Length: 431
Image (cartoon, rainbow, N blue to C red; front, side, top):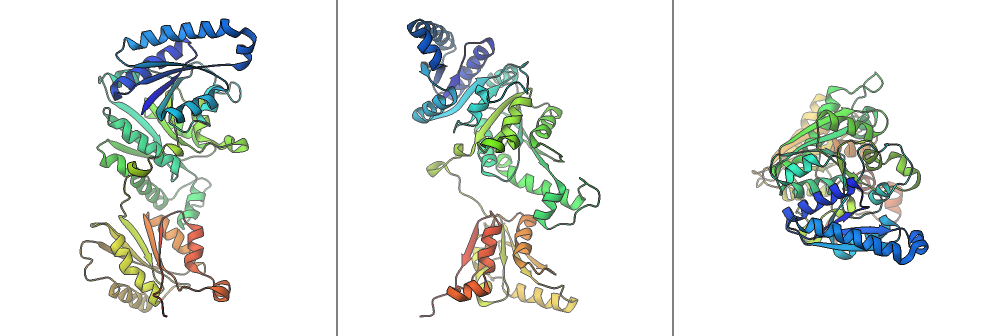
């Protein structure tokens, strides 16, 4: 793996290339110093422009080589974001370093080079604003305070994994920040909404804080100090994340990016974070997630299993215990369409308890009776969100043809309502 530094030979770009060289030396990898020429300028000025660019690139390469790192100069022609992305794919680069002047207007112009790079590159992009904290961290003189934007998405997981990799190079203190709108999250979790506009009830805040901590748990397990900030926010999420990062005096803001296009860019957190933040920013695309041999094994510590007390529903319970890691928790759930009486609920709990395998002593068990909803699928999906289930286990009646069309399938409908892993337990063959 290698680091790529995109330079335009400005003073801020020279500072960024110095930082990139220090990072490469610390990681024990090489540095590609890349300058991309405008094709119209090349056509207009020809060899004179090429010769001048090569000379400046050569001087910068010699300067960086004195820092004790192997530097390879590269001169390309074309649209910078596209050319850099192709070059990074070809070289298997792990990081692109670029710069944006600290006094550059956050609203100046549309589609600048750095913006296009953030929306095009398939590797993380470090946009340097204030290099001093990063330079001191590279030299081992201080820890690095990282503010990580948190949500439930693949880009976030990629960003979290990148911060874990960064922490291997030195002490990193992480603050995970999540911005949410109460009404939207209350609907997702099936919780009561506050009467006042934009107000969050304590129960909702508690669930979201726990969910945020669970999303950040891999960082804490890796040894990095981690704190969370979960805040209500109205408007663009990026504005609130940047404000929280400034409150925390963060050296580096890390966000995942969806590579949004067209009007979707109006809601792009990474795009607006790049424009608004006064600290350095790292944009991590979902494509940067580890795959194949480097993919960490998931651990299912909170597993929800739903049964309607049918044969296939009850068969799913043992599978849930088998899936749950030792020390984890199995949430055994039964949803009802109307509120049961005290006697009925006690009977249901007794039925649920009888389904727990005797060999499941190293797992925790929680029995959940979810009463009073005609929409069983929505109830189960919301319950899985509230519990923070890392996986859902359900039985299916195995209906097909007209029966499936007429009677429907709770399991199939749940698959469409949740993005959590679902294990479907089918009935045994009868023939």
